[in-house]
Image (cartoon, rainbow, N blue to C red; front, side):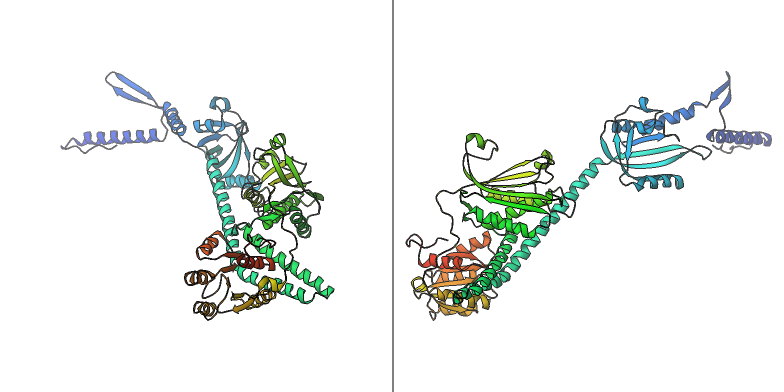
Length: 580
């Protein structure tokens, strides 16, 4: 504080005395501020008054305590022996303690520190020694056993002489934030997996057309060669192996399309034993784990209405999952197929099962098994117990989806250390017989009867092979590589045909455009369309364009043959012909 200069001139002696008193007052204030004065005396009319300054520090501590009590983060101070000297209200709530009970006790009685990385403890000690502060994340386990993820800011306290006198820790509970980050990372991972699946589906759809054209040419020419070499047994054996390999390659494309959800199921009456035996063969050939695979198929197994490719996918996924459960140890996978009739009592084992006749597939293994919590989640998409990068978590969810699409039920039995058992129940079909493994080939003259077919395809080897095949069935075939040329010839009446077979995906003019033009100009001329990639949208568009039959590439000889026969010899009017 400073005094104003007097307005009127004063005695020089009086002015000097006033300046001396002001200087003395300012010196006293400086001493009070520096803590060098414990008390001071003020002369008053009633006598001298003594003011003691010892309570200022206590008042300052009280105010500081009230401020810290309002802080939402936990604040704890400890002395050099790790004994608690202060704890605020937020710390009491965070660790479930009472200040009066923990003051003077060791910090370890409030919580146990669990370092996220072993080296972090040494890093924090070095930082406190060299810089006097450290900030980082770790996990605190409270006395009740609750683990919380925290972010701590620790600094060393200094006494007036500059010597360390303990630590101050400000601790923030970030468990909610970490949980949100984990959920976000999980969602991002799921999004990446979904994007990869979408990319795989796009790739599969893109390559299916060209790849299936190649396979179709191989399959058809193999059949033609088999007919030409009917008297050469060794050649027939080789051709049979070529056909098997080609069909497996064709089915592989269909499995990719099915797995990527881009290929709708094509269900027909099938015999499960043949599908399961083929699936077991593929598992034996493809699994690197030391797992023995045993397969038993009962003779009384009923037929079901199913997509054979999707059932094969189910067997492969379950077998692969079982082999992974062995974790590289020797073990066995048992596949059993049988018919079973459930009554009211036996059907109660699962709320989704109803009394009736079922075809049952049981896949069991001697792996590590699962606890109840894992069993509840095994069909969730992207859920996996395997390490990152070792599994997508999609295998069993695909199995579940396929079984549900077939009106089937999955029942799982498993215990830790006792392996797992997957029971698949498929309702049997009573009014239809399973399609036979072989189809009788009618004579070409009686089948085709010289009817004229226009075949359009932008793949010349495929076009040539199908032309030769259909001519052996007794049809006349005009094969066109140029779509517009073929269409113009038909619409102008220069080419009179009884049926048009066209590929869908062609440069210039697509199969749908050809079908629409024929529908508008010649509505009675039937059209069959062939495509290497069929989805629900294409089915709808094809029906609207007037397409009578839509079949997938690479079709085997019977698929194309059946489609043509369905046009010329409707199944309802011609007994004995194989239905599609």
